[in-house]
Length: 351
Length: 225
View 1 (cartoon, helix red, strand yellow):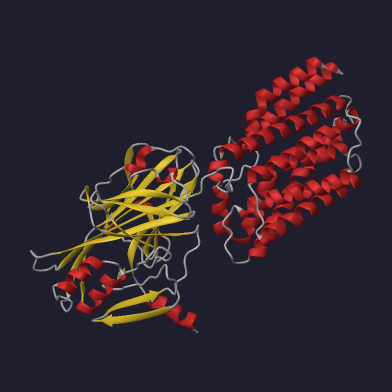
View 2 (cartoon, chains in turn red, yellow; view 1 turned 180 degrees about the horizontal axis):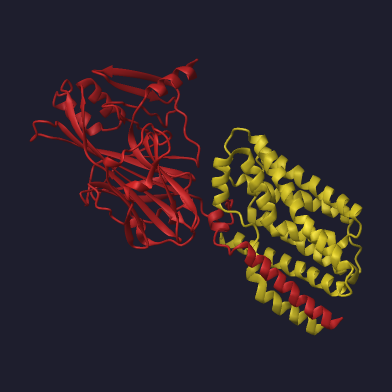
């Protein structure tokens, strides 16, 4: 019954909030057909497509070159997921980035406070609390700038460190594909290409294609035709909520690792296990010089996958590293036949 | 004999890099498994068998040793039962081991078969072990190798047993598809007057391939590649 309730609730959640570049796996082969999806909702479930007019930029960075992804290349799988089918091309570490235009959203004070709390914009919530502004409604301008880093084949290239020049973006300080589970990865957060210090960042991961379940309690609000819903996990480690407003936005958050950037805008992300890691942050400021806006926010996410190191004491499960660099099957067959042929000639001569 | 050994060693050095190509299984398989349901497990199982040269080389060695179709059927059945036991059992219970080590043992089975076919035990004046027993034993080991490979995929939790069985079914399909040309070629070659040279060539190849695969897997084990 509870599951049915949550299912019905999920149906009610028509829109989404966080935006991620999601792939089934971030380890790909050269010249492979692959698909990347824009997940607009939670990392586990997309609630809405991204209409092309919202896309400010979509770029692929490989072999030192930045290529624009034309809006016509994106296809909507259904009404929830926008996808890009592409050929992986040659081996290397690739970066894909998508930036959306700013949009405005009006929220009642209660809804706004709720969203700040549940999406982890805690600094702004604290500021509103300290300034006794919790009863003030908000008109927020928001924009999203997302990136993913994926690995094709075994050759590691330096594109992982490319700064796309988005208003806000995560830039790793090392190639995530030269890091392994059990290690840590330094990631810098840039705001207008400058390090952003003292900013809350949430980092979490899913194991492979499995998503974390969130089923404990849920609630939904509706104000002035706008719904605002939350689903909370029973897990200590993670929970999420969705927030619908203006018919297109849903908030989600997960506790995961709650990190704060240092003076250089750097966070140290733990990579405890193999999995797909996703980072997110919302940088929000108060707007004082506008008649229309009260707040402005810039959202950033980064996704990548981490595998384990292959050594004597580990299972070597990762086929990309074990096998994908292999030559084609026909080379083995041809080589074997050649060897047998040569041996045959030797033995025929001897016999 | 010295000349023969020298020539064989030279060929070994020239061709050993090719031996690292066994198991052409990639993350593309993972994609297929994630998106393709149970059919995908059959497909990947068959692909794995058809590109899992170590399994095929061992079977080639077994078939070379046998003459009648009845014998072939019996030995292949024993091998199949052996690998089904460990493939299903180990995967279902989550028993796994380092892939390099398992593949190294499988490589030794290839070496063993070539060595036995070349009369290695007779030359050493040692009684060769019961072949049916050894084929059954190696069947268990090959099945464990298949299991470790299957477990390296993200299989999810739904229809877990069905997925294993489908993968196993795929392996059997792949095995049958691979055996048809192998049996055909070997049967045909027996009628040829150059069969002794062909027999020696293929079995020396099995010995070299076994050594090469073993070295490759141990290298992988110690260097983490």
